[in-house]
Length: 304
Image 1 (spheres, rainbow, N blue to C red):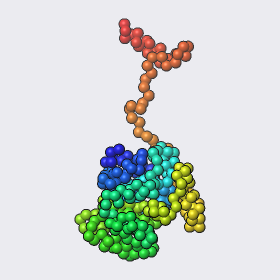
Image 2 (image 1 turned 90 degrees about the vertical axis):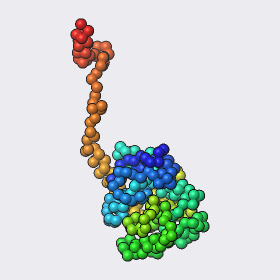
Image 3 (image 1 turned 120 degrees about the vertical axis):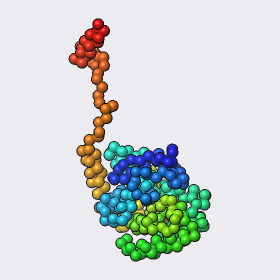
Image 4 (image 1 turned 90 degrees about the horizontal axis):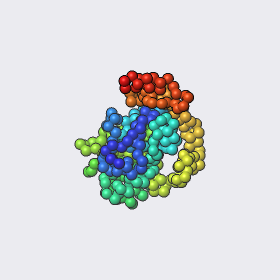
């Protein structure tokens, strides 16, 4: 695949990358290409929405995070229900492109090629794993800060700038929760000091923890049937009950509204799509229609 032109499909107000395999996306990111020219923004962000993120984005409770997600140049469908919904809505995606798979394929290449990377890790334990595998990576572990605390977000952003004072990283990878990682990445994108800013920012959530085995990832067969969310729920039922069984039910309404909107919007009729005039016999035998007789008469007059 040409990494300059990753195909896209429009869904839920976003332009999803429609790649056949994850390595096409990784090749594009490594080459610094494949950005979406139709996104009117300057946010080289990799955003991997699942059902929960799509619901939060349309609720708009976190405007900074929502605006950044809508400006992202690389949108990858993380959840299998998102892929199923794309088929129902007439814009079928070839497959899901989860953040956990993205990290599993991208990170070894970054390490092997010794690319300059800044990782914003969720814990010291994860930071130790990253530094052990790739000593050249810059790693920042922010202290706990509230989602709606701009001063704390700015302090974390400053720590990231200080960690990269002597080198501009090509990749910035944030592994925090929603909406923290998006509000932080928004500030990093806007205020990165110096003439050279990172080429791409990635919001990966818990993908690094899965990559290093600090959090269990669901088996492949569970992912294929779209039950990865239930596997995660079984691990943390008290924390995730409300998210999955109350808040995320709104995804059904989201799909229904887009389905109705698509049904009410007439597709433009192109001249090539108009039915052609019948030629010759339309129905054989005694069911020959009037058009057939008219054509025969017209042909006879022309022949004479």
